Length: 444
Image 1 (cartoon, rainbow, N blue to C red):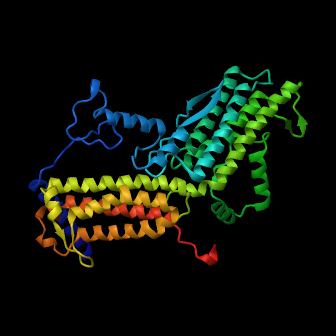
Image 2: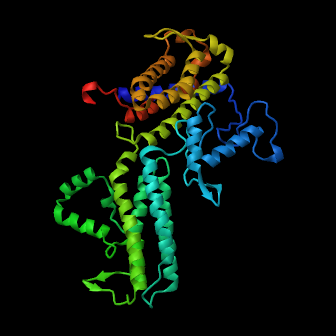
């Protein structure tokens, strides 16, 4: 009973503080445009040209270039620009001249650490694109052997299959790919049971719990998944409606009477092989795209994009802390002279702390990762993040808190610091998933 009353008193006190906060300090509002939003414009910028996106012409041009390249402009990152440019345009020699072709992105990736998807995911995405490029023309060329096939069903099934293949490939290029969405489309396209699309470790645990006939059941599932005459889903429906199966119940297809008919059937089998092969590739690798807060294995290229995004989130949160301080009349000049005395660390001015965090996530951190890779994540980035987290913890309850301005002790400032602490903590978790110690000479 005592604990309940204590909790109620705490909630009442927090609500009272919030009311005092609102009555003592104004609620400031401002137009906010997060980059690369067209609302964002430099201070003092005039109205937009022709009533379009606000901001200067340079900003509009940078936004357009970023959209074309799928790359966030960074003057100090010439390597990232070249990488984005190479991925976005293909060059070909045509009649003695060089022609360029833009490769529009089916995914949106903008990061300071890479010009697009890189590493293992780039290889998987290229693998998926090859499958798509081969399958779509073959799908368009399929014709029904069964004269009873409804033309509307024939057309509808073909378009459905093309859409499902396209969606699968599009997800392979997203960062991170949606495991649920990819699994769902493979289930629709190939009729593979959802339980066959979970991780091998989870599958084995389920098999033990359900006491399956392990060997026989696996044989059935594998053969069903890979045999074009037995797969289900949309491709299975195409096979049955079109009448383009090769054998059924040990008998040849009586509708196949010519070499052209046999090629039609084989084209369908090639489509099935491409997509079942892509499924097997996905099953072997999707574990490394799982999202979580623990120490889970991850592909470095994909993880660097997530880390780059979180760098931007932390930088935004630092500015949100500054805005909260502005709203309680602790302005830029006062922040430069507002001394925080930590319990177990040297004292530090508030603005110096915010500037150090911002500099780490906008300059030092990305530079260290580019130069040192996974080793730099462990030796440099993680220790710095630990110190920044401890710094924010100290700023939430400094030794000299009673002597600080009243506005600093308001709930809105404390909550903004809490948010900054949480965002730094999540960044540390992302780093820990792909960091690596320097290998000892004896282990190399």
